[in-house]
Image (cartoon, rainbow, N blue to C red):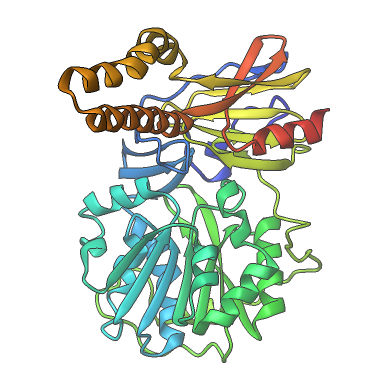
Length: 432
């Protein structure tokens, strides 16, 4: 990233898509690429989509290139097979992330595998994975259980253990949703749930993130190895960390692999990087984000709180507030000067328009009906039905009440739809 805060993602090993412009007076001018973004708001990332490139289809998640069709096998074979090999006939596997089904495809090449859980926070990625022929329809395999949810929460609620656990998410410096998968406490949780082998992505090879991940995993597992793989579609090396409770001794490999061989297994299991010093990753001292929902961050910008709302992803930084609209990918940012809230009710106009004629009609028509039909029980039943209808409208109405936050800045007001109050509290904490 340069001093202007522009997105240099192409030089950082991700997509060449530029998602942010220069910041002026607390506001961002943005140009959005015309790509096939997934437009459904249930996505937990701002932009998820497949794009046609000179390397075939590419999956882009918030500006990060997760894979390209021509050479994705290099990364996925390197990620999966060293861990599977040292596990010796693994039967149960957990994949955290990997909703595209490509790491899963590699796992299913092992005949010993009986059950695989794939847990991904983003149902849009899983939906894309279900439609990909590139993954050999792995998500439709009868041995696979798909879960839309957080991998850490899934592990905490599980009593079962897994022979192999694989973390296949985009690089930690790109995704605030995955930061909690790169902490000492998470690796301790993994150790309590894994029987044989654990492997995780660790960012760009040689980066501070990769060094800290290796050091932190080494604090938990007695046997660890760091290795890396060259990604043709980015021109950079992806760092991976392999760990086990037992010695890292690889055995066999499945047939038909195009990249991983016995020599690569040796490199993957014997890798001991020279690290003079690196801090253990904790909740109090997490990895530093370089991008928030695809928006490039300055060197001195830190995330205070990131929240996925219905139509928006909001990042409260120590210097500004970033709002990214899901689907469209439109980005706004502001330095708060004054923060206040107001209630927004989408049924207010309907309620006002109908209240005056409906209330007297609802109160007196049941009584009149009972007199005309000479049946007061029917009249009372109709009156009860009216009040129940009013109660039902109130319940439905509450589902549409949002708290809107407005931040006064030089370029106007920034609206955040927040029915949780978490964004408002974080903004007040930082900027009041």
